[in-house]
Length: 80
Image (cartoon, rainbow, N blue to C red; front, side, top):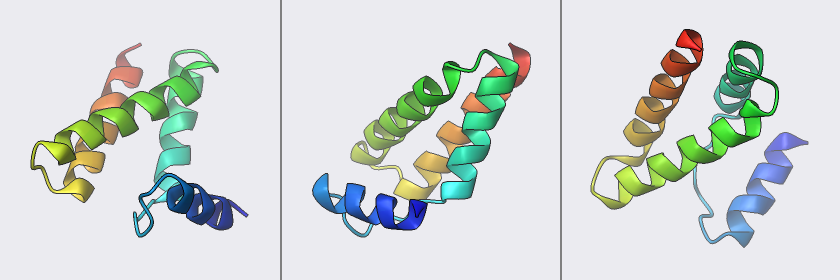
């Protein structure tokens, strides 16, 4: 179900072919929800995606941009 939703979403947003590690995104959402507060989950994943997109636009390899943004957010949530 999430793979289909992800494919539809990326296609409609004009980023078809984007590789999304759904389990990694969900794990980050879980960390934020438990360590900060439940509503932090969607906010965290949105900001991580936005930051990764900006980094990729600035020339950082997209997969690296995502990994680094996720790692930063997870570390911050661990300190919350």
